[in-house]
Length: 362
Image 1 (cartoon, rainbow, N blue to C red):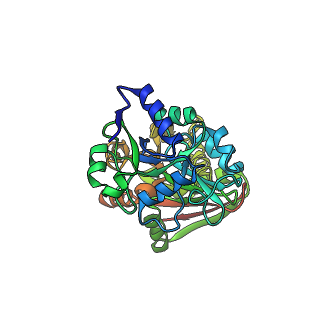
Image 2 (cartoon, rainbow, N blue to C red; image 1 turned 120 degrees about the horizontal axis):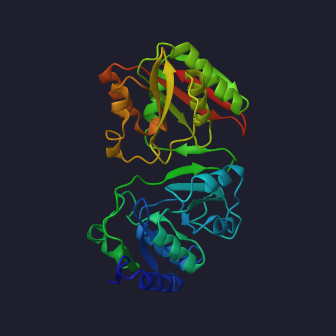
Image 3 (cartoon, helix red, strand yellow; image 1 turned 135 degrees about the vertical axis):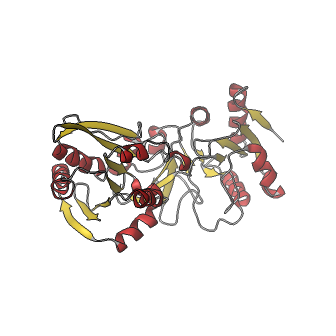
């Protein structure tokens, strides 16, 4: 069994991985989500091995991993919506679905002619793909319907003998953090369709709750203005409250948050807190300084919500805006119930590149 510790022998690991891929072999490699199964996406024999390895996969296509946007453009059409993802959110744990340019074949191309592209946020893997010079497959290294692998020893133990024999090289990065699988974003219609944990619970809650506002906004300013109107109507008492925002990337969650902040009297520029988890903005209310907490759960792991600062802000009587609230909706809703704190749910959906449908529930 060929196995290399990439922390001790990075250069050798890349050299041997490239040789394995060029010869039509398969590798197991690390990413920011879990260990992946890699093969040359342009080699039919390698793709055949991928399908044999994964066993029960059906017609589900296999994603590809690229080293950068330029490499992706060689294989798929990157429209305006996809371009926004590559420029602002990648590399990262996202699979961007785009239409194939015709130089790839199944199973990396779906029946509809689409390809799922990963641009992983893992330096070793990016260096490997750059050295190889073309994409590799980006499916997780578990056999179909088994748990994602975070440890090579456990993966080897769990694999059927037939699958294990198909691996030419294991690239061992040790125990990986148990992060969620990548979020899948379909951009083929130049609008986003998002599959994400927690979304079902959030949408179920909308059915059970009362709709208090509904509006189609035609531009960014109208989305901001709706946030201001909402604040005038429902946040006048300035008591602790959660505004749970759900919407696809670029849908307008931060613009709505800007409207809330402006109406409260925040003077600072409100930006997305994606990389800081919570941004704090001060404003004055009845002569006292208050804090608006603007939170983003996009990169939070399951166990991190409790230590994120959310509870402390609610205990301090602050208003908290939460982007991607649907990811942890069940936990956030339970917390609000336990603390007797109201929660407003704001659901933002694309209509076109400029128009948004925004519904607010209590």
